[in-house]
Length: 351
Image (cartoon, rainbow, N blue to C red; front, side):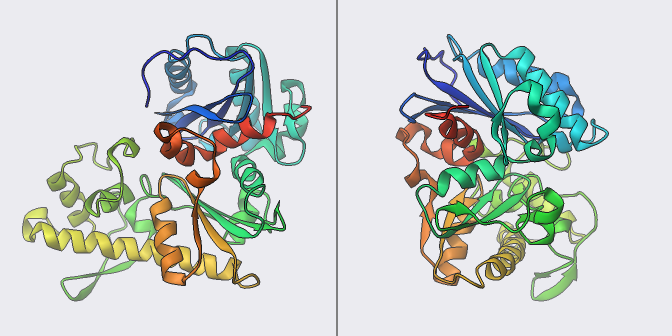
């Protein structure tokens, strides 16, 4: 992430995505160009003081923060809040108190609302970041399936005739319709991907323990960039090849020393295949009606969307190509799409 202070234009907008594991922000010019994107680790389940620190870290990199802030969130789901409504209210009040100028919150039904309206709109504010992303991308891709694979979850959103065409709205509904899958490429415990896996020609059981995460898989497959590998490892240890292989080996009752590193890479590919098959199942179900739709990849795990498009012989569009941004910010804009989206949707909007 950029560390130098940035002079901000007075008419720019700053989009925020308050997640349970990361705080993301995207600075856009009045013309909609992505100027800078920020992502910092923010394990919100540890308390609101963690969000305070993350917010200060991002704001400290702006010489003069803009006077227009647009906020979306998923952090209301963490277990420091008794329920989502309370989480939406607390996060909204927290952000409004600490950001100067106009602060608006994204609602999937009302678009942007003020703090005074949050309580009445909490249901459509909670975990609505996927809707903001899809609403933005639908302006460029009329027919497609947007797949945003993050550190923790995967959003699959149908776009039809330039509009969001999801069957579900709430997290519960979207999980029911395969539009929200709790599997990402960094934080997901491997036991969530499959119960059995192939190793050395044998089908073996997978331990139901938090020994390793998907970051270990994609570190060994060389698909997870170093800057995207922000979360703590499952055992709190380092992220070298040997330490990564050791965690992976534990998942099937082995030590890293029991096999050559090549065997652990093959095991990583088996877990990758399990995640890819889960995505293929959901994608095939969602595209049953429109088989010609493009697959649009977003998020830190969009390399899996590209692989899925090749497997299904479907056109692939990387969300980077749909955003107006510099080459330096392109990757982060795709990773932090909801933050980009809320800022972009606000431009020219009579909010």
